[in-house]
Amino acid sequence: MSYDPIIAPSMLSADFGALDRDVEMVNRSRAGWFHLDIMDGTFVPNISFGFPVVKAIARNARKPMDAHLMIVHPEKYIKRFAEAGVEWLSVHYEACEDLGAVLSLIHECGMKAGVAICPETPASVLEGWLSKMDFVLVMSVHPGFGGQKFIEDSIAKVECVREMIAREGASCLIEVDGGVGADNIPALARAGVSAFVAGSSVFSAPDPEETIARFLSLAEGA
Ligand code: DX5
Ligand code: ZN
Image (tube, rainbow, N blue to C red; front, side, top):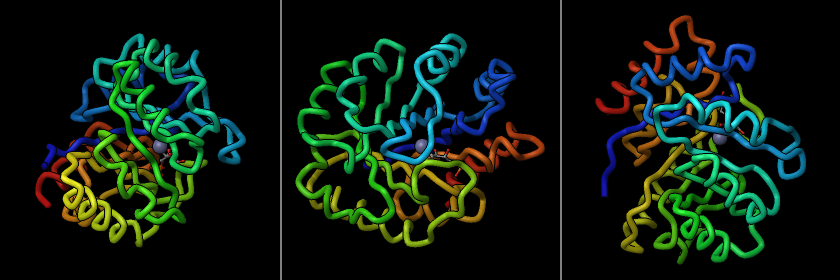
């Protein structure tokens, strides 16, 4: 199964004092999704933002929202993300006590279900689960902060996930998140990534809209 490439700007790197402006930039751009990083200070050593900000983005977003929950007990909040308008929701494998129940709940709430794995978590933990999810999020940095350096081993991990998906006859999309930019997009695309999360490389660029278009071309041309 192959998917058209998607660039998903991480709103964690947006300017929260000019949020509407940055949401409009993503709307105008060739980005496919809004990536929303939700951190609880427990699963990861940082707190990002919660429902008031998600709703402020949702009010003006004209593209699907992809929320990445870096929180313990994600099951407590799944319904509220659906009500806020999120369409793609990922939870961390490491944070779920009952992964099957969490994935079912995401689907019952009408969203696409994804499972994120940290750099130190082997892809093999997903064995047997892939037909129950819509996407896999391979973390290419340790979750918690934007602006970190891409972990090169993530490319091999993506290849491994792609092979497992094929082996299990599943049709999951592969998303990658952390340190993504022009230097690694072509190799990631060749390895099997369809959704590219990019925070600092987009928002700290002189022209974020042009940067998104360039990243998409790199993914398409790989
Ligand atoms: C990290 C977050 C990422 C992050 C990406 O925990 O999940 O989405 O914001 O930011 P960059 O692209 O700057 O690594
Ligand atoms: Zn993320």
